[in-house]
Length: 114
Figure 1: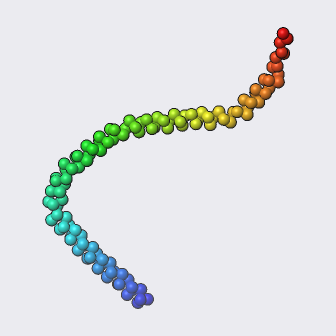
Figure 2: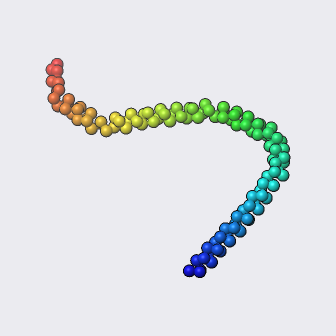
Figure 3: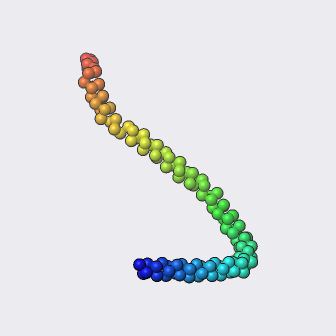
């Protein structure tokens, strides 16, 4: 029974060490974040024109690509509509042929004698 008590103490000690190490790393991260904040702000300010230029290039490329994408989507929609109509009509072909056969048998015309 004493082994479980010792094991529990070891677990508690391990968790305490992990908490201290985690707190040290948290403080280190906080100090580095505060120290490097001006550098990060300066770099963001310096890269702002580059980001704006890249954004403008993206807008121009998007404006050029939109008509092509719309043409492609229209073609896909037309082909899809044709395929959907064919998918509905193709199973009806045997019934249409049966109807033509019945029409040919029952509605015979007598040949005209010249």
